[in-house]
Every structure is written in C-alpha cells, then in structure tokens.
Image (tube, rainbow, N blue to C red; front, side, top):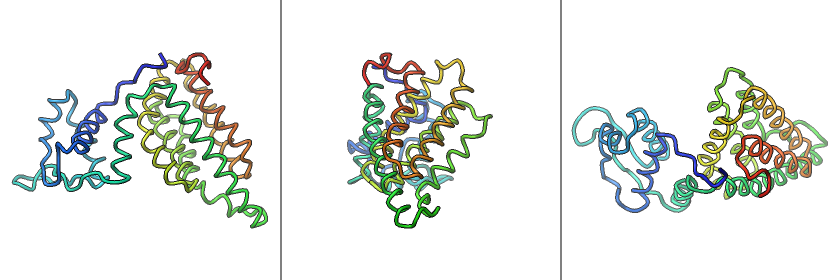
Length: 254
C-alpha cells in the first residue's frame, strides 16, 4: 500500500492540468482559459471544483477572473510561473505521484530540521531575554491552528487540512525560506496521504485527541528551546501517524 499514489481531490485535478499547461507553455499571458463548463466536462469534475482551482490560481497571481460577457470575461492568464514560483508549482505537480514512504522520509528530514533550528533559535532568544515570553512569538501562527483543531466537531478532512497548515506554519516560522517552500510544495501530497490514512482509522476521535496532545507537546518543546526533545517529538508524531494509519511497511522503512 505504501507505494500507491492517492487520487487527487477533484479541484486539484483541475489545478494540476492548468499548472502543467502554464509550465509547458501551452498557456501564456493573454490566453483565456476554457469556460468552467468546458473544463468541468473535459476533466470529469464538477464546476465547483473548477471554481476552487481558479480561485487558487487567482490568489497566486497567475490568472484574473471577471464576470459578465465580452473579451474580458472569464479567466485570463496574466502571468507565467517564473523563478521560485515555477519551481514550487513543478514540485506541487510532481509531488502528487511520489510514493508515500518517500514523502514520509522527506517530512522527517525537513520537519526534524525545522524543529531543531526553531527550538535552537527560540532557546537563544530566551537566554538572551532571560526567559521572557517574547521568545514564543514565532509560534503564534502555529498556535492559532492548534486552537482551531480543538473543535471536536471537525470532520477528518477539516482536521487534517488544519494539521497540514500547522506543520507548514512551523516551517515558515523557522525562517528558512527554502524549507518553507519545499513544505508548501509537498503540502498537497502530505494532506492527501494522511487523509487517505484516516479512512483506515477506526478510532478517529481518539486518534485526533492524541494528535492534539502531540502537537501541543511539540510546541511546548519548541518554546522551551529544547531542540533534542523537539526533534524526537516531531519524528514520533510523523512516524506514529503513518504507522497507525497503515501507510508504511510496518515501520520497516523508517
């Protein structure tokens, strides 16, 4: 099971198609995208999925959408991915086919390094400021995602989307822009795999409760400036979920 790719959600199918066309030059600035109805029919998805993909591209500044009729209506390409954006989109496209075990190993490399760097930096600030609370500032965004995950009414997909954002927020807080970009590029693949694993977890409420505790333990270790504990907690958190959800070869590849 660990080498099987998880099917992308419908809106991501649309996003992947448009991203690929942009990267390969099939679409260029000034080109209009096909109408929503046509995209939905050709890709076998609903129009709501098309609209969600267009919203993402709009936020990225790659297209502009306008209502009404005439030559300016619909979605038009206003930029092509260049530099870091191009690399990020290529990683996002490629990541959807990566084996689960490879994604997990990469997460371990990136996220334990993030934990080490972030805890060390916070620890240095705490020592310089004699342990004042100011050192916890970089983790404010991560804590907001933790608070949002405390809602027990969240469906697994909602919880895990917030989970992915929490881990990305930690990477961004580390101050390493390359690592943060790599985590952002892998986010869709990570979220898809962990969501697929949730389908195999019979005790989801208990699992979600355990993940909440683990998240807060990680943040506490970071705020204490303890890189050794932070690395261990992050590693146990990632490998533990993948094993519990049946996404690894019984731990043989760790």
